[in-house]
Length: 160
Ligand code: PNS
Image (cartoon, rainbow, N blue to C red; front, side):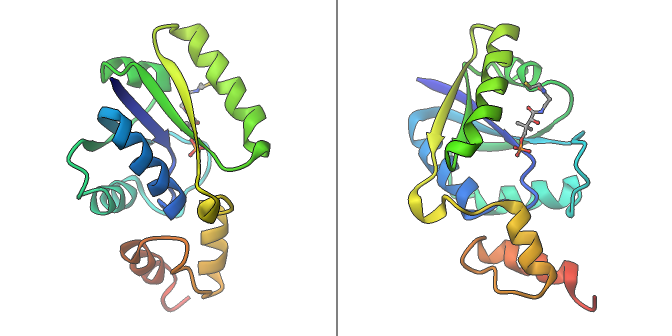
């Protein structure tokens, strides 16, 4: 049985992320969604905002927990007693970077396996960056993110 960590920036969480959370939760005894707090990227949403959004949209999953981490993913996975790291693959273009990360993490701890899950076709093109770009220009993001997140994006861009 998996005790898995699903790490990411989630700025913001999309239907693509939720699709992976749903699949990974099905195969896991416990799924810990790990939100990276020390990311070099400059995020639109603060850590508090992102953790709140993640907790809200995963509240119906009894075996899903959201935690914030900084430092190395492998150390976070170890601290959670996880035996797996879940990463979503949208397209083949994701693979280079993901394989590099997977091999590196395996070298750091061979007892923690990275498992790739593919995002279902209908979500395979969605990215947080695209969602933010659309929201910046007041486009309709309802097909890409949960309604709760739509509201948070609207709050960000209201009056701008
Ligand atoms: O959602 P993202 O931005 O694609 O997630 C990337 C993430 C958080 C998984 C990655 O940046 C990460 O693991 N960062 C933690 C630092 C670390 O462990 N680096 C070495 C991994 S090879």
